[in-house]
Amino acid sequence: MDYFHYIDGHLHAEQTPLREIAARVGTPCYVYSRATLERHWRAFDDALGNHPHRICYSVKANGNLAVLEVLARLGSGFDIVSGGELRRVIAAGTEAADKTIFSGVGKQRWEIREALEAGIRCFNIESEGELRRISDIAGQQGRVAAISVRLNPDVDANTHPYISTGLRENKFGLAAERALAVYRHAQSDPNIRISGVACHIGSQLTDLAPYKDALRRVLEFVDRLEASGIEIEHIDFGGGLGVRYCAETPPSPAEYGAAILEQVRARKKILPVVIEPGRAIAANAGVLLTRVVCLKRGDGGGADGGGADFCVVDAGMNDLIRPALYQAHQEIVEVEQQPSAPERLYDVVGPVCESSDFLGKARRLKVHEAQPGPESEASLLAVRTAGAYGAVMSSNYNARPRPAEVMVDGGEFHLVRKRESLDALYRDESVLPD
Ligand code: LLP
Image (cartoon, rainbow, N blue to C red; front, side, top):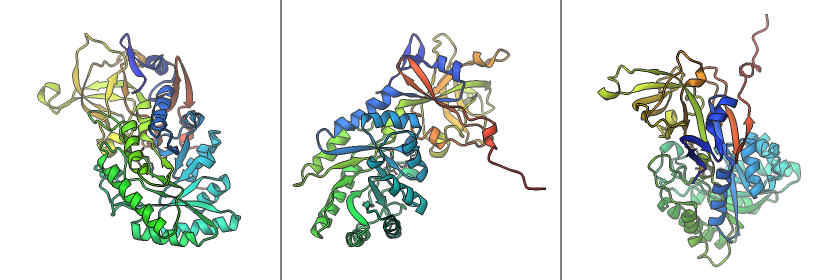
């Protein structure tokens, strides 16, 4: 459930018309709904009920400071994968370093150093060498680092291959035998404190079966650890719950939570649970607002001949890369409904010089261009479900400034990231000396 809805034919975020945001901030522009973010976070929190748990929102999905701060106010912890994400969590004033978990296969020394200095809750370790590096740096700092080892349970998450992470051939985590050896080393290392076991099998999961399977394997692994005298304080089950982009029917956070608790509660000892949802909190809390630049008849036969016409908009693959990178389908809707206008079939494309630059293919839309009038007369479109892996994956390709970001809060909206300036595109560059 989200708070993007039509009032008198105008698409609103909460009580704020998107048309007004476009007029004031310009396009392309990401628009987030605070109430939706909060609702989704609470759905996970409620799903785990009174079982000891922590929701560590995955910053990679959307690391805008305003998003982090809104979630921190609810009590959220964070899952980070870089020193840059740690800086974001701190810069947002969340005071949540001690609820922050550091995941990722390639943590560098400076990142480990900063994370230890900030007092993060736990490192999720992915290799033998990483344990040595963390121990070494913790020793130099006179600190003890809390760790989990990320188990690779060899489970097929049935998702896009680029976002599947729990198979043996993926670079993530360690198979049980090797993970056990890392725990044994950790056990005798005075710079390390064993905290948990971690696992994340993939993203955009729409079925509970692989989760249940992975959890069973993680808990069997915890049994093995306990049999070797290694006590675990929590399990971190990662993120990955899918959302509805189009026709998917993912489990609800409540169903997902119940599936976790069913197995965890069957154990003799209380085992606190950490989860790291990103997409399921942020995706449907955001849209990408874009305006039609021009309409162009396709030579592939046109709408009636099977091919589509082109609706060229001012957002491109540099602003939202998911359709190009994963062939992801995201709904595209008119911001202002015009029931009597003619509908045509369009490929919605951006201005970037690549044929992969599309936001949606074969979409039925009622749109018009502005020519010869002012640009503001052209139709506005909203690409739905763009709050996660949207702005964070944007780039400057084709020397295009990254879009503005806005957070709606009821009937008000706030600019939470200014549109990047053209100067900023080359501010840090220089030409060779004479
Ligand atoms: N924890 C770990 C260790 C992860 O690797 C990820 C995502 C998450 C949590 C959060 O997963 P979520 O709940 O958001 O599914 N750019 C891709 C998604 C990449 C996900 C990478 N890891 C996309 O746009 O579909």
